[in-house]
Image (cartoon, rainbow, N blue to C red):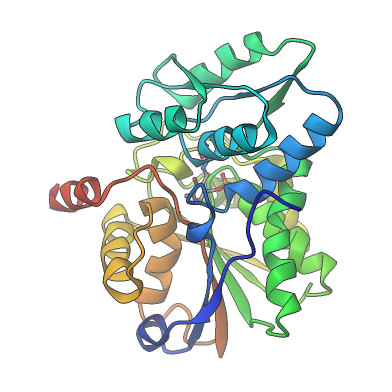
Amino acid sequence: MTLHINTPLIESPALSAAAHCTVHLKLDALQPCGSFKLRGVGHACEVHRAKGAQRFVSSSGGNAGLAVAYAGRKLGVPVVVVVPQTTTARAKELLEMDGAQVIVHGGSWQEANELAQTLVGPDDAFIHPFNDPLLWTGHATMIDEVASTGYKPDAVVLSVGGGGLLSGVVEGLQRNGWQDVPVIAVETQGAASFHAAIVAGKPVALEAITSVATSLGAKQVCDQAFAYAQTHPIESLVVSDQQALQACERFLHDQRILVEPACGAALAVAYQGEALSRYKDVLMVVCGGATASHEQIKAWLAQP
Ligand code: PLV
């Protein structure tokens, strides 16, 4: 038994037409908490509970926090989530709906995270939003599920925030013998910390996050994501906020599923037309995200 579910893998005629190649969607937007995060977070929470953790502490006002809240409720372990002031009312409402205690602190994830660290007692487990091998091992199940269907893609497209999803997907590719399958790692301008690491030759901190895709807003990627860029074929792409937002709108129209701009970033690469046309068949990781309403996405799109 796992906390995450085995999500549908479907071919999308609409995205295939736009991308000039066959596009398969791994629909992790359909996880119970609305994003892929439950794979890694659920795995980490189960391991910590088995070791006797009495409480889970998280520092994410985003989808990682929602996954911890869900996992805690399912495992009967209390959860406290420290969120920055920038966290949307919707995200707080979802966290509380899952029974988590929400503490608002600081102007960004960094400050919320600092307070969260001080709350971690000897019987608590801290669940990091992206930098933890337990998380990556859980995220890798996404590729196990794809491989178990007998389908092998020519490339995988995904979004990068702190690099946990990227690290998990590469772990999954490698443990299924798919070292030859390249990954296209997509970020938005203003949240492009993986791209900055590739340019600098080492993980570096961005001065600020200026993208609306706040779920991609880790100022620096984890070392593992950068290390994989040295050993696995990974291409780094950056799209604009407008491209990510338009991709959310088109995806809602095409597939009737609402995702965050964080996920729209990866989708935008398919909707751009040319970027994927050199491949025959591409796997699109629809990572999801539950913290942006459709009204919010429309309001962002209307901004100049
Ligand atoms: N969101 C993290 C980290 O934020 C969080 O705290 O929820 N797509 C969605 C919908 C996400 O929520 C995230 C991460 C990502 C993609 C990127 O995943 P990562 O951080 O593992 O690269 C800063």
